[in-house]
Length: 130
Image (tube, rainbow, N blue to C red; front, side, top):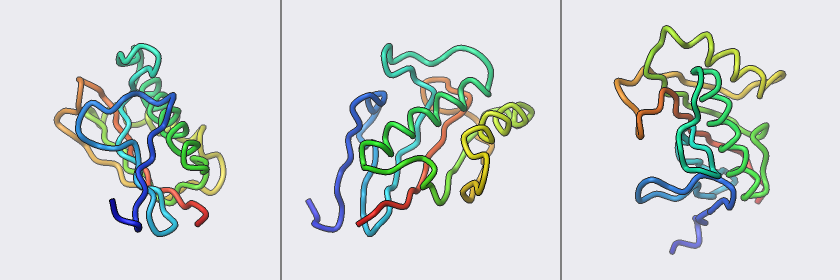
């Protein structure tokens, strides 16, 4: 393994559903893999609205950040993937509750499909102390 990158595995976050790490820490940044709205206790998709799924994605990302000694508030950029842009207002409302002031930069992408049938997936780049 490179001395320039450190794998972060987050106990309490849903297990990876493929060959990837929860996150990689490198050069003062934490690159978090996309989180789908999986309940970490059951491994199942949460039921409910796109807002409910957004909240679970962000809660899962917060657990990954904590495993690296960071907070989701330290995010510099998030990417939100949504399968139905008509539901974007629900996503936006739930997202805003996590970032009431000084939100990170963000990209939102409409996707034809997401892993495990999720309606929302979110990844993050987070600033971390060296």
